[in-house]
Image (tube, rainbow, N blue to C red; front, side, top):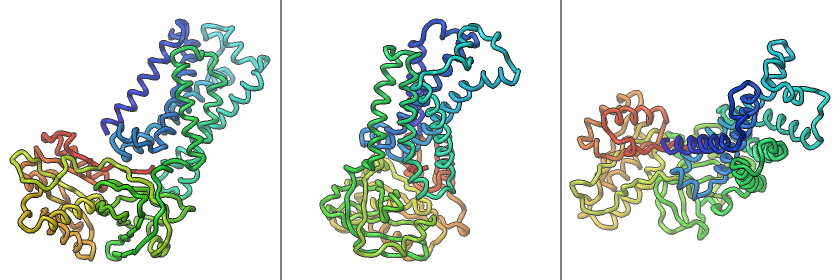
Length: 462
């Protein structure tokens, strides 16, 4: 989360300072007309810069993912950049129309402004814009309306994912429209200024990304087609276990990563954590929880032999310092894994890897794995899925604590401190309900844990 804030503030402060040094001394004053003019252009430039960052983030580029710290952080930044774009665009629209509205309704008059000649040129109906400028102005205004609607739909969790997936792609068209609006009307600021050169580069990159999105090429290099080999339905847990053979097209993954899976092209790709370790055999396994209309219907829509598309792997929910098999030293940090519900899936992959490595090295090596304690918060304590988890934990020689809703007390930081005497030097890994993760993190950090030692999966598509 800290890295998201740093990136956002870097863009905000960088663009603000670049704009400020690009405008003339008159526009830097705080007189009413100069302030209105400078903020009008500033909000428009900030909206375009933020949306440019948004379309770049939508590309799911590995270099950007590495910079930000994982695709979960990546998409959270994308969300806040989208909200920022909408707010700056709304402010730009209000600043543009506000003075006209005030004068029209008698709340202000043109004499209150510093430069009447500028006001006459701005307000007079007898001073029409050129056809290109007029079209760019109208296009920008309608693009803002459309963008605000799409941002609201994207944030409205009850809006069906399938519809969201399709409508959100229209953002690329809106972006191109706003670039045209900005390019035509940018002359007042000047292209041969620091902000002009910066925006020309940013908008050019953004347009390439927008066209790539419209062509359906986002993540194309990371897509692999495979087939479903077999399916296991854990009905008590409402979890569907899907095995997919991707052959030579899949080049491997690490424990804790996820992928976008397309079972139905009409529905589009959905993100699911990979629950199997990489065995160099082309197989990936997903445990999919029935949480909504789409995932609830999957058991009746997926069949063995069905062709699917998998894009990935993505994510940086890696278990560093990595618990490889080696002799325990006194300074080896204890790892505490905390899973809530289907948040167990990224841990399953690592569990299987450790279990298989332990089996390969023989029973005599059972004490050579680094210390790991797993807390699993669930509603069901007796099912085939839970039994498999117990068996895996025993094979991997890790400590498993079941926290069952309605039977046990909710997991707290105090419980973790009692169970893990070395908790101050431990590394915590959390995947599950965001509220629980944030609560545990805040309590542990407040009592002395380094914030960098609490790793939380934050993935949300919207």
